[in-house]
Image 1 (cartoon, one colour):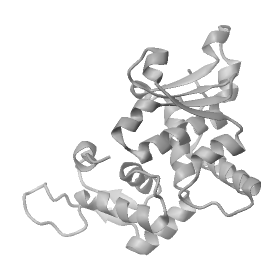
Image 2: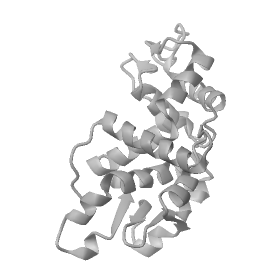
Image 3: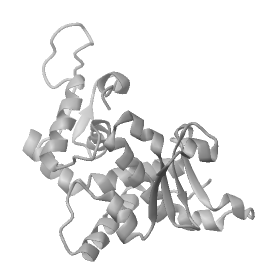
Length: 230
C-alpha cells in the first residue's frame, strides 16, 4: 500500500501526542517503560490479541496485523517462542503507528473493500515507506527523546559517543570507544532510563537516530553476532 511521505519530525510529534493524550486520560505521569498494551486498549479503544497469524493469513513472515473494521490489533503469537519482550512490545508500537498514521489512507484507497480491512506487516516489506514509518513511530513512542537524553547523560555524560574504532579491524586493542561496545551502552541505557520493555537492538538504532551514538568507522554493525541473545 502506498502512503504519502511523512517526516521524522512529524512522526515523532504524533507519537508524543499519543503519550500526552494517554497521560491526560490516566492522570499520572507516563514514563518508560511505556505501557503500549494499555495505550492500545485504554486510549485507542482497540482490542489486542495474540494469535497464530501464520496459520490465519497463510504466510510465514507475518509479524502483526491491524484490522480496521473490527478495531483489532493482532500480534503473531509465534514471536513468544523467542522469549523477546522487546520485540513483541516494539511490534505492538509498530501497529499503533499504523493505526495513528495510516488508517485514513487505507480506507481511501482502492475499490476492493476486502483489501482495505487490514494492514498486514511482513518482514519482507520492512523497507517500504508504510512499514518504515510505523517502525519509526514505535521507536519514538517507546523511547521518547527527552527521556533518552536524560538516561544517556546518566550513563555516558552530555557529549555523544563518536566511534572511530572497531576491535576487530586490525586485531589490536584500539582506543575506546569501539563499535562492539554499543550493545553494552544500550543495556546500560535500558536500565538507567527504565526502558525495560525495549530491546538492545532497538535502543542502539534509536541512539544513532538522535545522534547520541555516531559510527565513524567503515564497518557496519553485525546485528546477528552482537544481538544473538535477543
